[in-house]
Figure 1 (tube, rainbow, N blue to C red):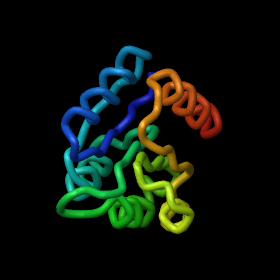
Figure 2 (figure 1 turned 45 degrees about the vertical axis):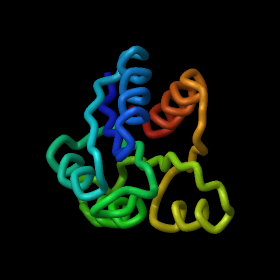
Figure 3 (figure 1 turned 60 degrees about the horizontal axis):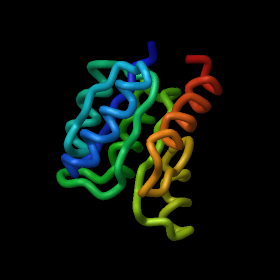
Figure 4 (figure 1 turned 90 degrees about the horizontal axis):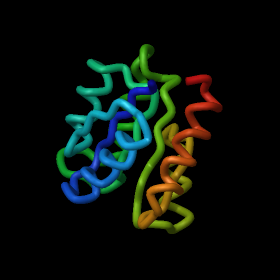
Length: 124
């Protein structure tokens, strides 16, 4: 089953997303900030990364830039999860290499449907 890395600084959201994806059968690891996400991605080589935009120590945008510079991770899809839905925020996310930008709040089945579709698109 696919490995998914979640980077989210809000513990309740991080746990809810992790629970939802584990229940759907995915292997899940979690980071609490952008810096930790970059380190874990390099170590674990996940099939998909779900990342908050606003996090301590390193933003999701900066973490995504670093992940996309890593030759081993450059093709790993990154999906931003954010409550910020302004067009400029979404465009910045796509510009730094994100595959998609999901707006919070989202229903658990909506999340698992998107994850399944993105993984299928990347042959995972």
